[in-house]
Image 1: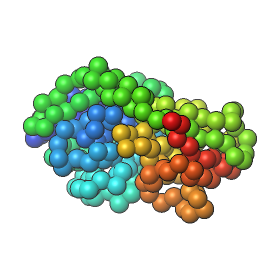
Image 2 (image 1 turned 180 degrees about the vertical axis):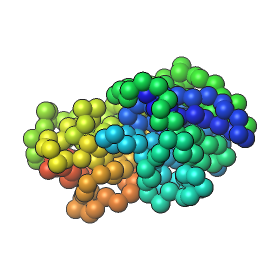
Image 3 (image 1 turned 90 degrees about the vertical axis):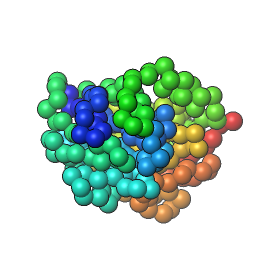
Length: 229
């Protein structure tokens, strides 16, 4: 399985296996949380699309860089590529181990100054806090899906043709990963990945903070976002 190797000041701190997706940011609800003011709350994500892996900047303040080049939107990753987020670097190791699975990596917490520790209990506590807040749902207004409503319980919910998607798109020409919806303390954010997605009739070109009543058209589906009290 491919892996991400975390470094600070050219020193290897730790590593984690890379499944379908890993998010990087300052908040504890990320897969890799870096407690550093140069890192945005949800800074970047690394994700699989087919047999390839990409890194995408999530609208961060200071940008995401691959081999010293700033990522304008997303960048295809090659074995050994170095991703820079704030003052830390993440090396993409394609040949890190066994074949890719659908499992997401375990959370890593990274403190300022380069000290790293694995704190799954803290990560679980953060997710529990999120789950205690109002929960979002996607209601199917048009199109054929496996159910009429999808609860956005997880930190990341995927819409696409891939088997790991919460909302599965049907059809050979549908994208494996069309949209990712990320849950944070401030609500839900939709980020487009492949294909065309519309929100309230307008093309989704970057991160969009979902509002109650927003209607998303993706892969032949019309999905209404609602917040349950």
